[in-house]
Image 1 (spheres, rainbow, N blue to C red):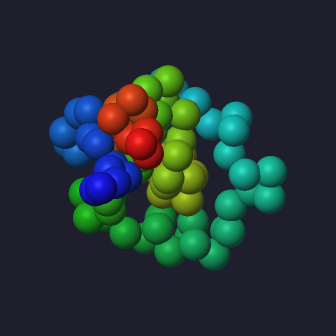
Image 2: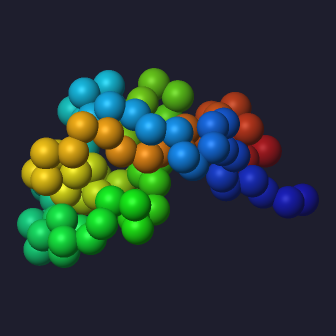
Length: 89
């Protein structure tokens, strides 16, 4: 049986404002500032989209999101996962 791990509900070029993304579930350890500093130096258009759940909680991309916030970006590209389609059966 084939397992589906990613099911993209929206195309990767959907843009979200940083204020609509929910972040209070980020790792209690925080983020690695060295990684954030590396990402801040990269053109946002060259970074892969972050991954959000349907409630706009960050699933993957906390370092990219933090870099965008630190740069003063107002938006970020994101995938939104369809949680029903990603359940392992």
